[in-house]
Image 1 (tube, one colour):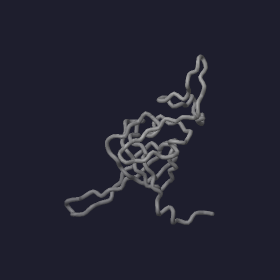
Image 2 (tube, one colour):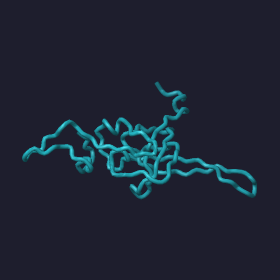
Image 3 (cartoon, rainbow, N blue to C red):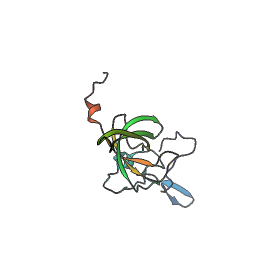
Amino acid sequence: MADQIEKAYQKQHLFQNAKARGNKKVATKEKRWYKDVGLGFKTPSEAIHGTYIDKKCPFTGDVSIRGRILTGKVVSTKMTRTIVIRRDYLHYIPKYNRYEKRHKNMAVHASPAFRVEIGDIVTVGQCRPLSKTVRFNVLRVSKSKASAKTFGKF
């Protein structure tokens, strides 16, 4: 059963979990609806075998990925199911014939299928607007090599 931590009852709206027998509904083995988002991205095993409910997840929810595919580094995971990524780029200044560093922060929806930590490199895909600032969804998480090498307390 899904973790009921929200005020409203959480269920997968796209899929019926029970078979009807007469007047009773008899629950069969826990079935879970999931999909392949395409574009060469694998569906995570947590999305297939997990128990979370997330209507904004590209693998188990009603969100399609279309448009741009971008990468960035995670800088904040303080929000619920939303992370902030930083995208660095170079901007050319013709007068000096040089480049300057610039960056943009972007709010991205992170499905519970992923364990995202600060410093990870994530690949995100564009989707419909999920909130005022969120228009992208996490598709893949690559653990940062730099964070693996750093010394941790105990």
